[in-house]
Image 1 (cartoon, rainbow, N blue to C red):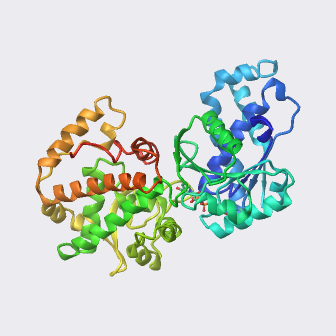
Image 2: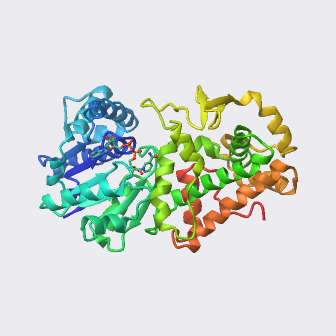
Image 3: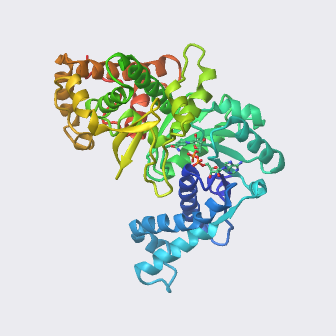
Length: 444
Ligand SMILES: NC(=O)c1ccc[n+]([C@@H]2O[C@H](COP(=O)([O-])OP(=O)(O)OC[C@H]3O[C@@H](n4cnc5c(N)ncnc54)[C@H](O)[C@@H]3O)[C@@H](O)[C@H]2O)c1
Protein backbone atom coordinates (compact mmCIF):
# COMPACT_ATOMS: atom_id res chain seq x y z
CA UNK A 1 0.00 0.00 0.00
CA UNK A 2 1.45 3.36 -1.03
CA UNK A 3 1.67 6.44 1.21
CA UNK A 4 -1.32 7.96 -0.55
CA UNK A 5 -3.40 4.77 -0.41
CA UNK A 6 -2.81 4.47 3.30
CA UNK A 7 -4.15 7.98 3.77
CA UNK A 8 -7.41 7.22 1.98
CA UNK A 9 -9.18 5.97 5.09
CA UNK A 10 -8.02 7.51 8.36
CA UNK A 11 -9.41 7.88 11.89
CA UNK A 12 -8.34 10.33 14.56
CA UNK A 13 -9.19 9.20 18.11
CA UNK A 14 -9.77 12.02 20.59
CA UNK A 15 -10.35 14.32 17.62
CA UNK A 16 -12.09 17.02 19.66
CA UNK A 17 -9.26 17.38 22.18
CA UNK A 18 -6.43 19.90 22.30
CA UNK A 19 -4.02 17.72 20.35
CA UNK A 20 -6.56 15.66 18.41
CA UNK A 21 -8.17 18.70 16.79
CA UNK A 22 -4.78 19.92 15.55
CA UNK A 23 -3.81 16.48 14.28
CA UNK A 24 -7.19 16.27 12.55
CA UNK A 25 -6.59 19.63 10.87
CA UNK A 26 -3.10 18.69 9.61
CA UNK A 27 -4.26 15.29 8.40
CA UNK A 28 -7.38 16.69 6.72
CA UNK A 29 -5.25 19.16 4.77
CA UNK A 30 -2.67 16.51 3.82
CA UNK A 31 -5.46 14.17 2.68
CA UNK A 32 -7.26 16.92 0.76
CA UNK A 33 -4.05 17.88 -1.04
CA UNK A 34 -3.59 14.25 -2.09
CA UNK A 35 -7.23 13.84 -3.10
CA UNK A 36 -7.05 16.95 -5.31
CA UNK A 37 -4.20 15.58 -7.43
CA UNK A 38 -5.46 14.82 -10.97
CA UNK A 39 -4.51 11.13 -10.64
CA UNK A 40 -6.68 10.79 -7.52
CA UNK A 41 -9.87 12.30 -8.95
CA UNK A 42 -12.83 10.05 -8.23
CA UNK A 43 -11.12 8.18 -5.36
CA UNK A 44 -12.84 8.30 -1.99
CA UNK A 45 -10.98 9.80 0.98
CA UNK A 46 -12.48 9.47 4.46
CA UNK A 47 -11.30 11.03 7.71
CA UNK A 48 -13.21 9.98 10.81
CA UNK A 49 -13.05 12.45 13.69
CA UNK A 50 -13.84 10.17 16.64
CA UNK A 51 -14.39 11.43 20.16
CA UNK A 52 -16.52 10.40 23.13
CA UNK A 53 -17.75 13.95 23.58
CA UNK A 54 -20.64 14.89 21.30
CA UNK A 55 -20.51 18.40 22.70
CA UNK A 56 -16.86 18.88 21.80
CA UNK A 57 -17.38 17.37 18.34
CA UNK A 58 -20.11 19.93 17.67
CA UNK A 59 -17.58 22.78 17.66
CA UNK A 60 -14.97 20.90 15.66
CA UNK A 61 -16.10 21.67 12.11
CA UNK A 62 -16.34 25.37 12.94
CA UNK A 63 -12.76 25.23 14.26
CA UNK A 64 -11.56 23.36 11.16
CA UNK A 65 -13.24 25.85 8.81
CA UNK A 66 -11.61 28.81 10.53
CA UNK A 67 -8.17 27.16 10.45
CA UNK A 68 -8.42 25.97 6.85
CA UNK A 69 -9.51 29.47 5.82
CA UNK A 70 -6.28 30.91 7.29
CA UNK A 71 -4.23 28.25 5.56
CA UNK A 72 -6.00 28.63 2.22
CA UNK A 73 -5.44 32.39 2.27
CA UNK A 74 -1.71 31.75 2.63
CA UNK A 75 -1.51 29.25 -0.21
CA UNK A 76 -4.06 30.69 -2.60
CA UNK A 77 -1.52 30.99 -5.45
CA UNK A 78 -0.83 27.26 -5.27
CA UNK A 79 -4.54 26.49 -4.96
CA UNK A 80 -5.21 28.42 -8.18
CA UNK A 81 -3.04 25.80 -9.95
CA UNK A 82 -4.84 22.94 -8.17
CA UNK A 83 -8.19 24.23 -9.45
CA UNK A 84 -6.84 25.25 -12.90
CA UNK A 85 -9.46 23.09 -14.63
CA UNK A 86 -12.33 24.76 -12.76
CA UNK A 87 -13.52 27.59 -15.03
CA UNK A 88 -16.22 28.43 -12.48
CA UNK A 89 -13.68 29.45 -9.81
CA UNK A 90 -12.50 32.93 -10.71
CA UNK A 91 -11.64 35.13 -7.77
CA UNK A 92 -9.59 34.20 -4.71
CA UNK A 93 -12.65 33.93 -2.45
CA UNK A 94 -14.21 31.31 -4.69
CA UNK A 95 -11.01 29.26 -4.73
CA UNK A 96 -10.60 29.52 -0.97
CA UNK A 97 -14.22 28.53 -0.30
CA UNK A 98 -13.92 25.54 -2.63
CA UNK A 99 -10.76 24.40 -0.81
CA UNK A 100 -12.45 24.73 2.59
CA UNK A 101 -15.36 22.72 1.21
CA UNK A 102 -13.01 20.02 -0.15
CA UNK A 103 -11.12 19.69 3.14
CA UNK A 104 -14.24 19.65 5.32
CA UNK A 105 -16.01 17.15 3.02
CA UNK A 106 -13.45 14.51 4.02
CA UNK A 107 -14.26 14.80 7.71
CA UNK A 108 -16.96 12.73 9.43
CA UNK A 109 -17.47 13.49 13.09
CA UNK A 110 -18.68 10.58 15.18
CA UNK A 111 -18.72 9.09 18.67
CA UNK A 112 -18.73 5.56 17.26
CA UNK A 113 -15.41 3.75 17.57
CA UNK A 114 -16.67 1.27 14.97
CA UNK A 115 -15.95 3.86 12.25
CA UNK A 116 -12.26 3.13 12.79
CA UNK A 117 -12.79 -0.51 11.83
CA UNK A 118 -12.50 0.48 8.15
CA UNK A 119 -9.42 2.70 8.50
CA UNK A 120 -5.88 1.91 7.39
CA UNK A 121 -4.37 4.65 9.56
CA UNK A 122 -5.28 5.56 13.13
CA UNK A 123 -3.97 8.71 14.82
CA UNK A 124 -4.58 8.59 18.56
CA UNK A 125 -4.73 11.57 20.93
CA UNK A 126 -7.00 10.48 23.77
CA UNK A 127 -6.11 11.00 27.41
CA UNK A 128 -2.75 9.84 28.72
CA UNK A 129 -3.91 6.53 30.17
CA UNK A 130 -2.11 3.35 29.04
CA UNK A 131 -5.07 1.08 29.87
CA UNK A 132 -7.57 3.13 27.87
CA UNK A 133 -5.19 3.45 24.92
CA UNK A 134 -4.45 -0.30 24.91
CA UNK A 135 -8.12 -1.17 25.14
CA UNK A 136 -9.03 1.05 22.15
CA UNK A 137 -6.11 -0.17 20.02
CA UNK A 138 -6.93 -3.75 20.82
CA UNK A 139 -10.62 -3.33 19.93
CA UNK A 140 -9.79 -1.65 16.62
CA UNK A 141 -7.06 -4.14 15.76
CA UNK A 142 -9.34 -7.12 16.47
CA UNK A 143 -12.26 -5.78 14.45
CA UNK A 144 -10.44 -4.09 11.59
CA UNK A 145 -9.54 -6.43 8.69
CA UNK A 146 -7.01 -3.95 7.17
CA UNK A 147 -4.20 -4.37 9.72
CA UNK A 148 -4.23 -0.62 10.44
CA UNK A 149 -1.21 1.36 11.58
CA UNK A 150 -1.36 3.28 14.84
CA UNK A 151 0.29 6.66 15.41
CA UNK A 152 0.04 7.50 19.08
CA UNK A 153 0.54 10.98 20.46
CA UNK A 154 1.40 9.72 23.93
CA UNK A 155 3.89 12.01 25.62
CA UNK A 156 5.13 9.53 28.19
CA UNK A 157 3.98 5.91 27.78
CA UNK A 158 6.56 3.55 26.24
CA UNK A 159 5.35 2.57 22.77
CA UNK A 160 6.49 -1.03 23.28
CA UNK A 161 4.05 -1.30 26.20
CA UNK A 162 1.19 -0.15 23.96
CA UNK A 163 2.32 -2.43 21.13
CA UNK A 164 2.55 -5.52 23.32
CA UNK A 165 -0.56 -4.66 25.37
CA UNK A 166 -2.73 -4.36 22.28
CA UNK A 167 -1.00 -7.12 20.29
CA UNK A 168 -0.20 -4.85 17.34
CA UNK A 169 2.97 -6.69 16.28
CA UNK A 170 4.87 -3.53 15.40
CA UNK A 171 2.06 -1.69 13.60
CA UNK A 172 2.59 1.28 15.90
CA UNK A 173 4.92 4.22 16.35
CA UNK A 174 5.07 7.18 18.72
CA UNK A 175 4.41 10.34 16.75
CA UNK A 176 4.61 12.97 19.44
CA UNK A 177 3.31 16.31 18.23
CA UNK A 178 3.83 19.33 20.44
CA UNK A 179 1.03 21.68 21.41
CA UNK A 180 -0.51 23.12 19.26
CA UNK A 181 0.23 20.56 16.53
CA UNK A 182 -0.57 22.89 13.64
CA UNK A 183 1.95 25.51 14.80
CA UNK A 184 4.63 23.65 16.70
CA UNK A 185 7.35 22.48 14.33
CA UNK A 186 8.67 19.64 16.49
CA UNK A 187 7.67 16.00 16.33
CA UNK A 188 9.40 13.33 18.42
CA UNK A 189 9.27 9.98 16.68
CA UNK A 190 9.57 6.94 18.90
CA UNK A 191 9.91 3.41 17.61
CA UNK A 192 8.72 0.49 19.75
CA UNK A 193 11.09 -2.49 19.93
CA UNK A 194 9.18 -4.13 17.11
CA UNK A 195 7.96 -1.15 15.03
CA UNK A 196 7.85 -2.26 11.40
CA UNK A 197 10.29 -0.43 9.09
CA UNK A 198 7.44 0.49 6.72
CA UNK A 199 5.57 2.19 9.59
CA UNK A 200 8.67 4.23 10.39
CA UNK A 201 9.17 5.12 6.73
CA UNK A 202 5.57 6.34 6.53
CA UNK A 203 6.03 8.39 9.72
CA UNK A 204 9.08 10.12 8.26
CA UNK A 205 7.28 10.84 5.00
CA UNK A 206 4.21 12.20 6.79
CA UNK A 207 6.40 14.41 9.03
CA UNK A 208 8.26 15.68 5.96
CA UNK A 209 5.03 16.52 4.14
CA UNK A 210 3.83 18.40 7.24
CA UNK A 211 7.18 20.25 7.26
CA UNK A 212 7.96 19.13 10.79
CA UNK A 213 11.34 19.01 12.50
CA UNK A 214 11.84 15.37 13.50
CA UNK A 215 13.81 14.26 16.54
CA UNK A 216 14.03 10.52 17.17
CA UNK A 217 13.77 9.44 20.78
CA UNK A 218 14.40 6.01 22.22
CA UNK A 219 11.40 4.29 23.71
CA UNK A 220 11.89 5.31 27.36
CA UNK A 221 9.00 6.74 29.36
CA UNK A 222 8.67 10.50 28.88
CA UNK A 223 10.99 10.53 25.87
CA UNK A 224 13.16 13.63 25.50
CA UNK A 225 10.60 16.43 25.95
CA UNK A 226 8.95 15.29 29.15
CA UNK A 227 12.20 13.63 30.24
CA UNK A 228 13.61 17.14 30.60
CA UNK A 229 10.44 19.03 31.51
CA UNK A 230 9.28 16.76 34.35
CA UNK A 231 12.72 16.72 35.98
CA UNK A 232 12.90 20.48 35.57
CA UNK A 233 9.62 20.79 37.51
CA UNK A 234 10.92 18.44 40.20
CA UNK A 235 14.07 20.53 40.53
CA UNK A 236 12.16 23.82 40.81
CA UNK A 237 9.75 22.38 43.39
CA UNK A 238 12.64 20.98 45.43
CA UNK A 239 14.38 24.37 45.35
CA UNK A 240 11.16 26.04 46.53
CA UNK A 241 11.13 23.68 49.49
CA UNK A 242 14.81 24.38 50.26
CA UNK A 243 14.13 28.12 50.23
CA UNK A 244 11.44 27.54 52.83
CA UNK A 245 13.74 28.63 55.67
CA UNK A 246 14.11 32.14 54.31
CA UNK A 247 11.02 32.57 52.20
CA UNK A 248 7.33 31.82 52.49
CA UNK A 249 5.99 29.36 49.89
CA UNK A 250 4.62 32.07 47.57
CA UNK A 251 7.85 34.07 47.82
CA UNK A 252 9.99 31.04 46.97
CA UNK A 253 7.70 30.03 44.10
CA UNK A 254 7.88 33.59 42.76
CA UNK A 255 11.71 33.49 42.99
CA UNK A 256 12.03 30.18 41.12
CA UNK A 257 9.51 31.22 38.49
CA UNK A 258 11.39 34.47 37.92
CA UNK A 259 14.81 32.79 37.82
CA UNK A 260 13.65 30.17 35.34
CA UNK A 261 12.13 32.81 33.07
CA UNK A 262 14.16 36.02 33.33
CA UNK A 263 17.60 34.83 34.41
CA UNK A 264 17.56 31.69 32.28
CA UNK A 265 16.11 33.66 29.33
CA UNK A 266 13.18 31.32 28.78
CA UNK A 267 9.75 32.19 27.32
CA UNK A 268 7.94 31.40 30.59
CA UNK A 269 8.79 30.60 34.17
CA UNK A 270 8.65 26.97 35.22
CA UNK A 271 5.40 27.31 37.20
CA UNK A 272 3.72 29.25 34.41
CA UNK A 273 4.65 26.40 32.07
CA UNK A 274 3.15 23.87 34.50
CA UNK A 275 -0.07 25.91 34.45
CA UNK A 276 0.02 26.09 30.66
CA UNK A 277 0.30 22.32 30.32
CA UNK A 278 -1.97 21.68 33.31
CA UNK A 279 -1.05 20.78 36.91
CA UNK A 280 -3.09 17.59 36.54
CA UNK A 281 -1.44 16.67 33.23
CA UNK A 282 2.08 17.16 34.66
CA UNK A 283 1.22 15.15 37.75
CA UNK A 284 -0.25 12.36 35.64
CA UNK A 285 2.72 12.25 33.26
CA UNK A 286 5.04 11.89 36.27
CA UNK A 287 2.94 9.04 37.60
CA UNK A 288 3.18 7.28 34.22
CA UNK A 289 6.95 7.81 34.01
CA UNK A 290 7.85 7.05 37.63
CA UNK A 291 7.48 3.24 37.58
CA UNK A 292 10.01 3.15 34.73
CA UNK A 293 12.62 5.09 36.71
CA UNK A 294 13.79 2.81 39.52
CA UNK A 295 16.76 5.06 40.34
CA UNK A 296 14.77 8.26 40.92
CA UNK A 297 11.49 9.41 42.41
CA UNK A 298 9.81 11.63 39.86
CA UNK A 299 7.06 12.81 42.13
CA UNK A 300 6.24 16.35 43.26
CA UNK A 301 4.10 16.50 46.43
CA UNK A 302 3.37 20.17 45.69
CA UNK A 303 1.36 19.12 42.63
CA UNK A 304 -0.67 16.70 44.78
CA UNK A 305 -1.42 19.51 47.24
CA UNK A 306 -2.50 21.84 44.47
CA UNK A 307 -4.74 19.22 42.89
CA UNK A 308 -6.28 18.36 46.27
CA UNK A 309 -7.32 22.02 46.44
CA UNK A 310 -8.73 21.98 42.90
CA UNK A 311 -5.86 24.06 41.47
CA UNK A 312 -5.40 22.71 37.97
CA UNK A 313 -4.34 25.35 35.44
CA UNK A 314 -4.81 24.34 31.81
CA UNK A 315 -6.60 26.43 29.26
CA UNK A 316 -10.08 27.62 28.41
CA UNK A 317 -11.45 26.59 25.01
CA UNK A 318 -10.49 30.00 23.58
CA UNK A 319 -6.86 29.27 24.50
CA UNK A 320 -6.70 31.70 27.43
CA UNK A 321 -4.94 30.58 30.58
CA UNK A 322 -6.84 29.24 33.60
CA UNK A 323 -5.54 30.04 37.06
CA UNK A 324 -3.17 27.42 38.44
CA UNK A 325 -0.10 27.84 40.63
CA UNK A 326 -0.25 31.40 39.36
CA UNK A 327 -3.30 33.59 38.93
CA UNK A 328 -3.54 35.45 35.63
CA UNK A 329 -4.94 38.78 34.56
CA UNK A 330 -4.86 39.44 30.81
CA UNK A 331 -2.50 36.47 30.51
CA UNK A 332 0.03 37.89 33.01
CA UNK A 333 0.74 36.33 36.42
CA UNK A 334 -0.51 38.57 39.23
CA UNK A 335 -0.70 36.25 42.25
CA UNK A 336 0.56 32.90 43.53
CA UNK A 337 -1.49 30.17 45.19
CA UNK A 338 -0.62 29.40 48.78
CA UNK A 339 -1.72 25.80 49.50
CA UNK A 340 -1.67 26.32 53.30
CA UNK A 341 -3.89 29.41 53.16
CA UNK A 342 -5.87 27.93 50.23
CA UNK A 343 -5.81 31.38 48.62
CA UNK A 344 -3.87 33.44 46.09
CA UNK A 345 -1.49 36.09 47.34
CA UNK A 346 -0.79 39.12 45.12
CA UNK A 347 2.78 39.17 43.78
CA UNK A 348 2.89 42.93 44.31
CA UNK A 349 2.77 42.32 48.08
CA UNK A 350 6.14 40.50 48.22
CA UNK A 351 7.88 41.11 44.88
CA UNK A 352 10.15 43.94 46.04
CA UNK A 353 11.23 42.05 49.18
CA UNK A 354 12.13 38.89 47.21
CA UNK A 355 13.90 40.82 44.45
CA UNK A 356 16.00 42.53 47.08
CA UNK A 357 16.92 39.21 48.69
CA UNK A 358 17.95 37.78 45.32
CA UNK A 359 20.45 40.62 45.23
CA UNK A 360 22.34 42.31 42.43
CA UNK A 361 21.88 40.51 39.15
CA UNK A 362 23.27 41.16 35.67
CA UNK A 363 20.52 42.46 33.39
CA UNK A 364 19.30 39.51 31.35
CA UNK A 365 18.33 40.00 27.71
CA UNK A 366 14.58 39.60 27.20
CA UNK A 367 13.75 36.21 25.68
CA UNK A 368 11.76 37.95 22.90
CA UNK A 369 14.72 40.08 21.90
CA UNK A 370 17.05 37.08 21.71
CA UNK A 371 14.94 34.56 19.86
CA UNK A 372 15.50 34.86 16.13
CA UNK A 373 18.24 37.47 16.69
CA UNK A 374 21.25 36.90 14.44
CA UNK A 375 23.58 37.83 17.29
CA UNK A 376 21.79 35.50 19.73
CA UNK A 377 24.88 33.49 20.59
CA UNK A 378 26.94 36.60 21.29
CA UNK A 379 24.19 38.19 23.42
CA UNK A 380 23.78 35.00 25.46
CA UNK A 381 27.52 34.55 25.85
CA UNK A 382 27.89 38.10 27.17
CA UNK A 383 24.99 37.72 29.60
CA UNK A 384 26.02 34.32 30.95
CA UNK A 385 29.65 35.41 31.37
CA UNK A 386 28.34 38.21 33.63
CA UNK A 387 26.07 35.76 35.47
CA UNK A 388 29.02 33.43 35.97
CA UNK A 389 30.94 36.15 37.80
CA UNK A 390 27.98 37.32 39.88
CA UNK A 391 27.78 36.00 43.45
CA UNK A 392 24.42 37.24 44.74
CA UNK A 393 21.94 34.61 46.06
CA UNK A 394 19.86 35.08 42.89
CA UNK A 395 22.90 34.54 40.67
CA UNK A 396 23.86 31.36 42.53
CA UNK A 397 20.31 30.03 42.24
CA UNK A 398 20.24 30.85 38.51
CA UNK A 399 23.58 29.17 37.81
CA UNK A 400 22.55 26.09 39.75
CA UNK A 401 19.28 25.97 37.81
CA UNK A 402 21.04 26.23 34.43
CA UNK A 403 23.58 23.60 35.46
CA UNK A 404 20.82 21.25 36.58
CA UNK A 405 19.05 21.70 33.24
CA UNK A 406 22.30 20.79 31.47
CA UNK A 407 22.73 17.78 33.78
CA UNK A 408 19.19 16.61 32.98
CA UNK A 409 19.98 16.90 29.27
CA UNK A 410 23.19 14.89 29.61
CA UNK A 411 21.33 12.35 31.76
CA UNK A 412 18.87 11.81 28.92
CA UNK A 413 21.79 10.76 26.73
CA UNK A 414 23.57 8.59 29.32
CA UNK A 415 20.30 6.83 30.22
CA UNK A 416 19.69 6.02 26.55
CA UNK A 417 16.66 8.27 25.93
CA UNK A 418 18.28 10.71 23.51
CA UNK A 419 20.85 9.78 20.89
CA UNK A 420 22.98 12.90 21.20
CA UNK A 421 23.30 16.47 22.53
CA UNK A 422 21.93 17.96 19.37
CA UNK A 423 18.66 16.02 19.72
CA UNK A 424 18.20 17.17 23.33
CA UNK A 425 18.92 20.78 22.39
CA UNK A 426 16.62 20.65 19.34
CA UNK A 427 13.70 19.45 21.48
CA UNK A 428 14.16 22.30 23.95
CA UNK A 429 14.77 24.89 21.24
CA UNK A 430 11.93 23.81 18.97
CA UNK A 431 9.39 22.18 21.26
CA UNK A 432 9.79 24.50 24.25
CA UNK A 433 10.95 27.63 22.38
CA UNK A 434 14.04 27.97 24.53
CA UNK A 435 16.56 30.47 23.21
CA UNK A 436 19.43 27.98 23.67
CA UNK A 437 19.82 24.27 24.29
CA UNK A 438 20.38 23.10 27.89
CA UNK A 439 23.66 21.44 26.92
CA UNK A 440 25.94 24.39 26.23
CA UNK A 441 29.18 26.04 27.30
CA UNK A 442 27.79 29.38 28.45
CA UNK A 443 28.63 28.87 32.12
CA UNK A 444 31.77 26.80 31.60
N1 LIG B 1 -1.76 18.87 25.69
C1 LIG B 1 -0.47 18.80 25.40
O1 LIG B 1 0.27 19.78 25.58
C2 LIG B 1 0.10 17.55 24.80
C3 LIG B 1 1.30 17.64 24.09
C4 LIG B 1 1.81 16.48 23.50
C5 LIG B 1 1.15 15.28 23.65
N2 LIG B 1 -0.01 15.22 24.37
C6 LIG B 1 -0.69 13.92 24.47
O2 LIG B 1 -1.81 13.93 23.59
C7 LIG B 1 -2.86 13.12 24.14
C8 LIG B 1 -4.12 13.96 24.26
O3 LIG B 1 -3.87 15.05 25.09
P1 LIG B 1 -4.78 16.37 25.05
O4 LIG B 1 -4.07 17.38 25.86
O5 LIG B 1 -5.18 16.69 23.66
O6 LIG B 1 -6.05 15.84 25.86
P2 LIG B 1 -7.55 16.41 25.81
O7 LIG B 1 -8.16 16.03 27.08
O8 LIG B 1 -7.59 17.84 25.36
O9 LIG B 1 -8.22 15.55 24.63
C9 LIG B 1 -8.51 14.20 24.73
C10 LIG B 1 -9.75 13.96 23.91
O10 LIG B 1 -9.96 12.55 23.87
C11 LIG B 1 -11.34 12.32 24.04
N3 LIG B 1 -11.50 10.95 24.55
C12 LIG B 1 -11.28 10.50 25.81
N4 LIG B 1 -11.51 9.16 25.85
C13 LIG B 1 -11.84 8.78 24.58
C14 LIG B 1 -12.19 7.55 23.99
N5 LIG B 1 -12.24 6.43 24.72
N6 LIG B 1 -12.47 7.54 22.66
C15 LIG B 1 -12.44 8.66 21.93
N7 LIG B 1 -12.13 9.88 22.44
C16 LIG B 1 -11.82 9.92 23.75
C17 LIG B 1 -11.83 13.41 25.00
O11 LIG B 1 -13.23 13.62 24.91
C18 LIG B 1 -11.01 14.60 24.51
O12 LIG B 1 -11.69 15.33 23.51
C19 LIG B 1 -2.33 12.58 25.46
O13 LIG B 1 -1.78 11.32 25.24
C20 LIG B 1 -1.25 13.59 25.83
O14 LIG B 1 -0.25 13.05 26.66
C21 LIG B 1 -0.56 16.33 24.94
